[in-house]
Amino acid sequence: MDKRIVVTRTVPESAVELLREVGDVQVCSQDRPLSAPELREAVRGAHAVVTMLHDRVDAELVAAAGDQLQVVANVAVGYDNIDVPAVTDRGVTVTNTPGVLADATADLAFGLLLMVTRRLGEGERLLRAREPWTFHLGFMLGTGLQGKTLGIVGLGGIGQAVARRARAFGMNIAYTGRRRASAEVEAELDARHLPMDELLRTADVVSLHCPLTEQTRHLIDEAALAAMKPTAFLINTSRGPVIDEKALAEALREGEIAGAGLDVFEREPEVEPGLLELDNAVVVPHLGSATVETRTAMAELAARNVAAVLTGDEPITPVR
Image (cartoon, rainbow, N blue to C red; front, side, top):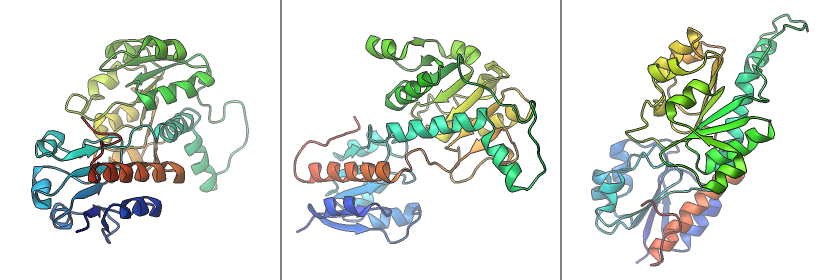
């Protein structure tokens, strides 16, 4: 009997073809996030489930799938949507898609940085509104990056890719995180390791690249924002709940920091209404990995993980 593979939302056809080589593939017809009951019903009898970052995977879902479930392949680097201990304790392998989206996400992070520091979104809105304008030396002045300090929270693959782009713009690199980077990485990036409080206090731009955990939820709260320079900018392409959005909206409104660029949000797809009212907040709808090449690579890596597990091999990128 063919192994049943459930894909919870549309993925590139090349990934589906890889999955068809090892089982009977069902792609959920509703191209939207499934409710918890819908998701549990969809995975019944599945040997493998390919999930998205909005799918909550927990013991209840694994139980609904049944004892034959072997692997959950998340099409994302982050796996905060998965209760990993609850799933792996039942003998189910969990995989993710690291590595393939570092450059795309770093490009997006730097795009946000340029948009907010050079007021690009604000300028485009002015033109589209057909507002009168004229060039003069004080018109829509932004902030230059050369010689400024980029403070990176989480110097993993994406954080390092952002640092390389920042170095090309003449920025200095500082970082903090759960563990210190290797001497080789620090030397390549000329990066200084700082405690979190010192990084917040001294960085001209703070860019978040840490996973969402209980320790990082609301890592950037009212106190953290108050510690930042009033001329500093905040960039987030990690996970929305790392920032307290209400506190951020208030800090931006009151001029406690100069601006923010956000690709992710605390209650996606909702966005804190206060942020949408502010010209010094640049917001985009979770586009960090949104290139044809990257999203295809992510889906294909998830498919290869499924194929490996279902054929008795070791997964390529397991979550430990």
